[in-house]
Structure formats: C-alpha cells, structure tokens
Image (cartoon, rainbow, N blue to C red; front, side):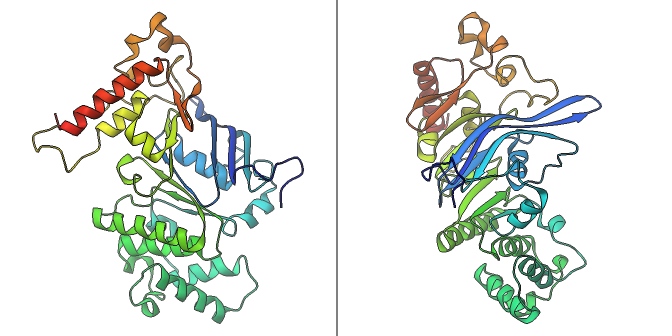
Length: 351
C-alpha cells in the first residue's frame, strides 16, 4: 500500500538527504551527510567506498539500527511508500527480517556461538510467523539446501565454529532470506573469504535474487567485485555520495577522481606482471574534521586545475553529467572526461 501523498510510481527504496551524526568527546562525527539514493524493485545497487566512507552507516539507517539516543538521524527513507526514520521501534522490529534483511560482513560474530545454526534460523522464522518447531525446522532445512550447504540434514545441527567461513556466510544468507524479504542489504558479504568462495557467494546472491525477486543493496570497498552483480553503482567518500551511474557507464566513463583512483587500484589479469597498482595517495579524512571544500581535495591530483581554488573552499554539488550519471566535482565535465579517458587508456595498456 502506498502512503497517502506518495505516488505509486515512486522508487521502491528512496533515500532523501540522509544525515547521521554521532557526538563524541573529540567532536561531532558526521558519518553520513546529504545522501540521496533510489533503487527500483528487483534491481541491485552497489555502494562502494573505503572504510569510513559511510556505506555501512547508511545501511544501518535503512535497517533502523542506529541508536537514536546517541546519534542524530535526519532526512527521509521511503521503502515501498512507507517512511522509516519516523517509524516506532516496534514497527521497525517487525519490519526487520520480514520486509528488510541484512547480511553482515562477519558471520562468525553475527551467529551466536552457543546455538546450533538450525536453531538460529528457526528462531528467525518463529519471530515473524505463527508456526510449530517441526515445521520451522523443515523450512530451515530446505533453505539450507537452497543456499548450497552440503549434507544440510547434518549441518543444521552444527555450531558456527564447525563450519567454514563460506558455509557460515551461506547460513547468514539463509537466515536473511528465510522470511522472503523484499529488500536484502549485503554488507561486505565476501570479506575474509578466498577468491573462489567470494565468487560463489556473489553468484549465490545473484541467483537467489532472481529466484525470490528481491531488491539488493551490495556494500563493498572493492569496485572489482560489483561489475557482474550490480545494475547501478554509488561511490561514497567522506560520508557523501560522489558519483552515481549505471554499472556499465561507471566502468566505461568514470568522472570523479576518487572513482578513477578506486579503479586504478584494482588488480587486473590483463596487466603486465611488471605493472604496479596505483594507490590513492594520502588517507581518508577524519569525519570530525572534514575539509571545508571538496572532501577529496587533499588526495586529488587534479584540484590545481580548478580556477579560483574552489576545491579548497566550496563543497561541490552532486550534479548530472549525463542521463542517470551524477558526479560531485568542480572540474568541468569535458575535462573530467579527458582525464578519465587518459586513465582508462593507461589501465588498458598496462603501463
């Protein structure tokens, strides 16, 4: 049902001017500021950025996991016509797990070490359905099979420490999907997994998305893993969105210098062995002491090309550079494209 005053044509998930701030003894941590995003039903949005860029805090705000007693949350989050920020705690609790679910990056700390994995999944079922223990176990067992747990009949009675990292992550996916949510948030779902298992987990999420028709937000620091799984990519830096584009466009024509830096630091199988990766110089900014102008300016190698030193004193707006492509940068669009093409040519040539 659509909330009165909301158009039925609104995106399935729409975030408007989201801000999250945490007071500390050292000052106010502006973890997220002015984030606006939207995603259509059934699509996958990847949110990419370094640690501390605001990705996970944005996800926690969507889930209603920010403690409002110690943090300030502003803006709007609309999910299928329902505004979430103003929702009472009981309503948020009912929504989590049923309509919205999250896969956390560390399954070993997310799963309770003293309970069997089957009991933890059935508990998630019974939290949202009136169902008996035997029926809940049957549903849990079937879901473990669907996520590819071998010998599920035996593994359902294992404790988390008895499973490999990949299998624990599959259990987390089973638990997240057990109540058929409409939105799945995967927060660094392949962290600490080897490359082969990473590929298996990403393939599993994509396959289950098609099977269940869910909408997915994939949070990662690695642009290299989203090319084949995401429809759109939002790049975050310093608590802000700095570039948004369809995945193919972002890889073919990235325009924000930070995005170029992320792409340049991805290992490529088509590079010569002698070619060195190009790391982004410097460190991410402190969320307590953000630069006055562009938050990326201290690490940007192109800011001296902007007339009048605007990068030092003026926050750039997130503006459209093409249909569906938004960029936060003071450089003129044509110059950004020339820089982008030059960087991509170097990456393609491996030199």
